[in-house]
Image (tube, helix red, strand yellow):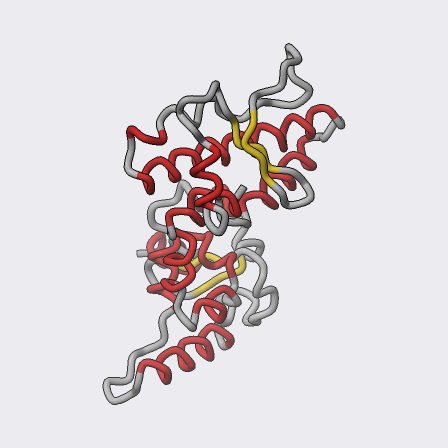
Length: 229
């Protein structure tokens, strides 16, 4: 279907004659496509794509028309995927896995409109290293706040690359305020808003779900100090 709307667009445009009946764009597993009439069976064997894509061809800007067809094609592919999921008895986990596999790919609309390329260009060279940071730390108190808490002290004379390396080293040297280790980087961590020390969630008995509802977290040491005061 992507071929029809990109590399084969001239052929596709000619086949979508507004003078013809309701036409549909079909995509097949062998990576071919076809513009043809909808199936005559009622109900059809599989969900049908959008009808009458040819009628709007001459009434719209070509790019807008192709984008519209692309959106309807995405909707059709999703309906077909989940139709087979239901037909073959996918359970909850299998359906979630199916959706994640689909969601990891750009949509037809994103490819046709060029959004997919823009998203690729906007990715920074350091994106991979950021993804290697303990993701559980980001979960604790929100992405923006956790990133600021994890930032290494800035060196006024250092370059951007040096700052990135220092920041990564600082993350590796982060120790839990309770057990004193930096083990379990893939586990959930939480930062005290008072002393700014980091703790394993399991060490202070805080779960990710509970952390989402805590506006300002104080570690046990800071809580005890306040109680004594």
